[in-house]
View 1 (cartoon, rainbow, N blue to C red):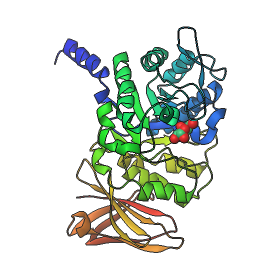
View 2: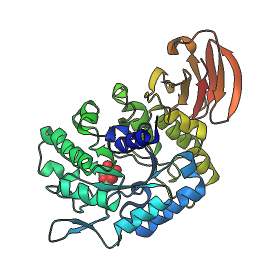
View 3: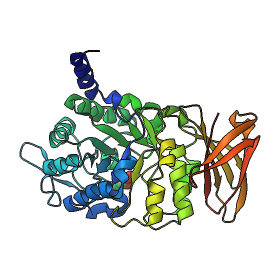
Length: 377
Ligand code: GLA
């Protein structure tokens, strides 16, 4: 292929949202740790820390500003950032200068969830403003939209912004946030969505994370795939409300679910354990597998659950989870995941090959913990 054709192809592909989020988006979001305290300096600091901590090299690319950046509209109706963000374009340039991408947040309603200015009746204008600032990712949160729209309007409302983003010609990842209402997984992709929240907000607690990750994702798996993902919400790893075994379960489950991996902690002061959990390349590879198949639960006996995820090279990822408060043996029987005979097993948290194993793999799993393995075909 000659150079001119190659350039034309790469230019045209840059213009199509269909090429975005071919694997689940990875990055950082301000809400879980900073909430309304996020400001320009915090975002620059996180961009610096993503690079210096090794998170960027591990694949975390988006630096996403959540709610509370919004200021008033000017006389022409253009949205402006508030005093916490003196110059959004300069901030985007700074983040881009680090080889990262930047995300922003809004609502289709008149107000965001935290009561700031939403995009109601300014959808195209806001999309153009964000594109001019250099924004690469939008989280669009329903919030007060139910004051001005009916639930049955929701698809059209999200399509309106999806179309407005496309019209900017800038590739902007489109993240729908309406907590799984109206079976969003059935139509999220058709309105231009690259990901959609399936549930309400996660909290930094075992019960919240476990309920969302284990119990509320089933039945949506067939809607996930390259370019369009179910989103069980952002990560709480490193925020202090769960122990390391629970955070490894959180990370493993999100990887099995092919979920977006948006860290929600302060990246400046990560413990060795938090780093090891967020940057385990073998676990990230399960999440980012190019086949894009969402894993599912294949067995459940009391608190013992086995989850399976098909991978692009024919391997299988298996999660042996223990939801109880004591050590439990969890067994993954080859026949329930379509395997027979002997297969090589690799432990992805201990980074060890466990040899060839016949008929089943079984392990003692700690309380609220996981053994995550990769099985060669
Ligand atoms: C909603 C969303 C959260 C966060 C807040 C911000 O609750 O679900 O993820 O964006 O709004 O106000």
